[in-house]
Structures are given as C-alpha cells and as structure tokens.
Image (cartoon, rainbow, N blue to C red; front, side, top):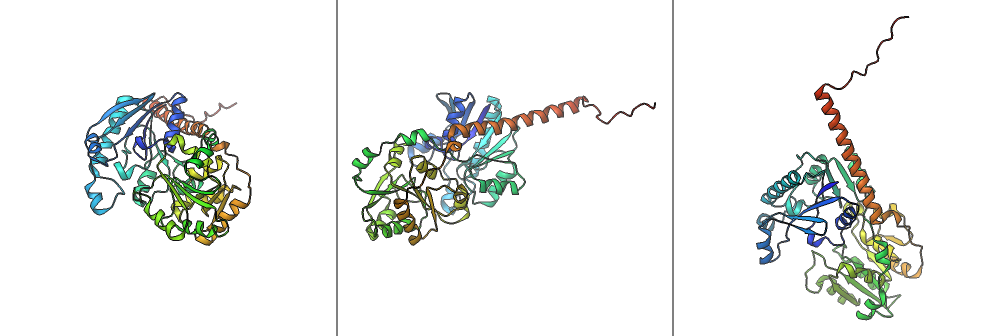
Length: 399
C-alpha cells in the first residue's frame, strides 16, 4: 500500500507515539508511507520555517511539510476546535497534491483538527480515521465519522460509539513494545535520582486529572509507608515548563517528596518504568477517560509493575489483575496504592497488544477496505460497459 498519513501531532514530536510505532512497522512490512506534517510554532525560528513547504526523507519514510500560519483567532477566543481556516485550506490543498502526485492508495488521518483543521473528505481514495481519543467537539466528531470509510478505534468503548452511528469501525488498541520495556535498567535511574531504598510511585507521561487528587492520595499512603517517593516523568501542556509548579506546590504543602525529571528521551523511558514500584494512571471519571486506551497502563504492565488507576470503563473491561481500579478521590486511591505495594498480582498477557501484531491488523483491515473498493469500481465499470449479465433464471423449456 501507498499511504498518506496525517498524524495528530507534528511528526517531530511523534517518537514513541501510536502513529510512530505503526508507521515504523508498516515500513518494515514493505508499505510506502508518506507523512504530512507541520511545524509547531513556539519561537521566531519555527515561525519562519513553518511558512515554507518542503519534502524530505527519514530512511524509507517520506515527510512532507506544509506551510502553517499562527492562529490569532484561537489565541483571542481560545477556540481551537477547528484550527485556523487558512491552515485548513493549506493542508487540504497539500493533501490533494500529494494524493495526485504520489498516486496514493489510502489516506489515514488522526485528530489533527486543532492544529490544521479537518482533512479533505472529498478525495477519491479510501479515507481511514485513526480515532485515538474521544473527540470532545460534537460537530468535529460528526464530520470525522460521517466522512470516513473506516474508523480505527483504540478502545471498545469507541468502537461501540462509532458503530452506534452506523459507521464501519475496527478495534485497533494502543500497543506496547514489550522487549524494550523489559530491557529497562532500574538501578542507574534510582542511583542518579536518589531513589535507592525508596518505594517509588511514578506518573510517567503526566496524563492526569488537573485536580491532582493523586498527590493527596500519595500523602495518605505515606502515613503507612513513609519511604514513598513520588516520581513525575515528562511534561504536560497544561503545566508551566519551569518546575511543574502545581505538582511541586501540592507536594510541598502535603510533605510528599517529589522527583520531577521533565521530558526524557523516548529511548531512555524504559529505565523509568523499571525503576518504578507502583505506577499511576489518575484520570478523571468522565467520558473522555472512559474511552481511552492508555499506553502508560500497557507500558507499566509490560515492565511487570502494578498500576493504580481511576475506575474507567475501558480499563474495567480489560480486567487485568495488576491494575487496581479506584474512584478518583484521595482516600480510595491511597488504599489502592497501599494494596499495590502489599499484593503481588500476576501480569496480563500482552501478546495481542504487541505493535507488530497491531500493524498486521491495521494492514489486514485497510487491505480489506481497498479490496472492497476495487471490487466496487470493477462492478461499476462493468455496468457502464454493459457487461453485467442478466442473472434472472432462464425458464426451462416445456417437456
């Protein structure tokens, strides 16, 4: 297959993300992948770079960069549901050009509407929507679902939601690189961060409730286990860059020892999972988190770690023994942390979440769609040429 892929983030920020893993493995399976991306505008140099378009290569991957303008309307109104209209026009124009020039077979797009608007839905090639997380803008979600030939859903909750709209959906969860996680080196991280001999409760990736209820839960758990240390790894868009100040302020207030690393290279993140004793996935109890397939829960599990997570619908369906589901409030979450340290649950079988397995399922679903489209075109061509035979039964001759 020749695939044009529009990711949900700029490609420069995609290492370790879902699309990055799938693209990497699809390339290894012999498919030709083109990515259409953009520059994140954060400083003057990026602003100058983003005004031009160019095409380059990263090994076998072809990367197209479309021009993108700052969004002054969004900065004023704080409405980023659809991006800046000129950017949507620019990206639609680029998509159409690449589809034509490269003779693309399949157009795949993620939730990039905030940055570059909606993709062009009036193109001739099959359209596949990679539904990563629940879209919180009803009109935008309706547009994606109504105009896609296939929706790949990361959770069974999303599958049910999409099929209820009468749209074709396939289950393609997030995955995990089990070998990479198992190869992590815990002791180097523990020594470097002063965690030797401590009980490490970590939040890797910083996907969490902005109420920070889980920090209060860690403080409660420390009443029974005073040697607990909170390890926060990564960065979050809703936090200031300097010092993760809401985390730090709450931890100082409650006397919780905090080690905050900031962003770490994707190649090194396995070490932090292995240096963890108990992982956290402290989301809010709402439809967005209910529909999520959290990569971090998969990664903690692949590293052989227990996880304390908010009691969410998709995680409830997993039913994994190492994932302790609790209401998102301090007392219950604290009890879950203590249980996670005290019990030694078995780990789930993650074979079906291996990225290689998921790439093969992506391939199977999309090739089936292409085959159906080809059959439909062939049948239509026969009708136009008058080659369809009248299949009504021929009456038998009288004896």
